Amino acid sequence: MQKYAEAARAGARPPCPTLRIALLACVASTLLLVALRSRAQDITRSVSPEPARSAAHLTSREYWSSGRVRLFAAGVVDVGASARGRLLLGYGKPHWTWGGFEFEAASTSDAAITAVRARIALVVADVGLAYRRTFAYRRTWIDREQGYTDGDLEGSPKARYHSLDLDVWGLIPAGSGFVQWEVEAVRLYGIPRNTDIYEEWLRAPVRPAWTTDTRLAYAYTFYHGRAAVGAMAEWLWLGGRGSLYRIGPLLSYAFTPHWEATLLLTTPVSSPDELNFFTGLYGTVRVRWKFASGERASIFR
Image 1: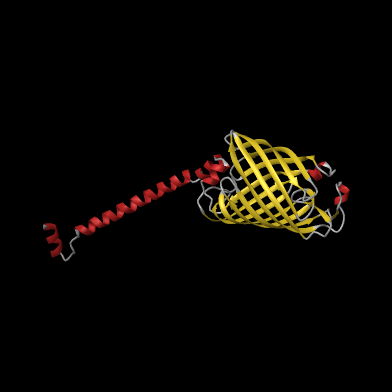
Image 2 (image 1 turned 90 degrees about the horizontal axis):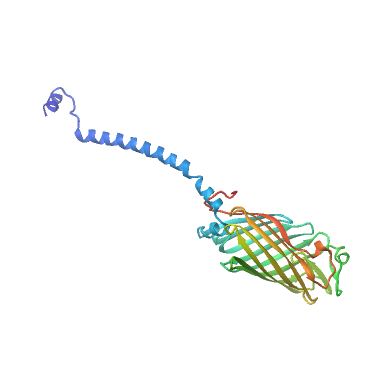
């Protein structure tokens, strides 16, 4: 009290204890904030790469099934026997369970294809309905006969046609692997009367307007579900020309949830036609990259 009185007599304002405490608290808070911010930056630098490393060690199923339900844009790019790209716009978990639309463009050495598809992807089954345009590079309309050779398929004018494709497919866990099944119905349009067409999508000469394809495969999985080895059998109804049966191997390996490689090749074992090996071959050899908006890890890993 004497100190305050002397200060008052000297004309000076006595120091306020409350102000002094507030100033000390402000300084302490500032120092604490700086220390906490520095610590947070250290933690962020050490932890931020971790989600990408963790994602790279997840299987594709684990990674995509654990994603958030959301509106998204996603993509699938295939490079190999064909160049193929798909843009996905939908709601749900991309590349897992979702509904929406796909916009597709693809090219092989034989044809170019564009398609718009409405799709619902569920856990054990996918359903897609597509409008497709096909532009053949080498093949033309075929005068109807009982069977065909490669020479019957090529010529001018080059075939241009469109179709509606209904596709239902899925996976069923079975033993140490999975059963893959698919049923596809194709309605062809724009085909001249009394002609057949080499259907570039199904890779077989078919008779308009309807044709169907049924595929069944079993694959054994190993290496924590990243690798699969199996075989596929295929029955293609040629739209009034009889049936085509093909079988062949199925191999796949997922390097990360974003990158995978696949080999699927089925060759005819029974057919009304006498085509060379590559003309009658169905399948693909590809490397696939898939990604989606809103991911928690780098889309390049």
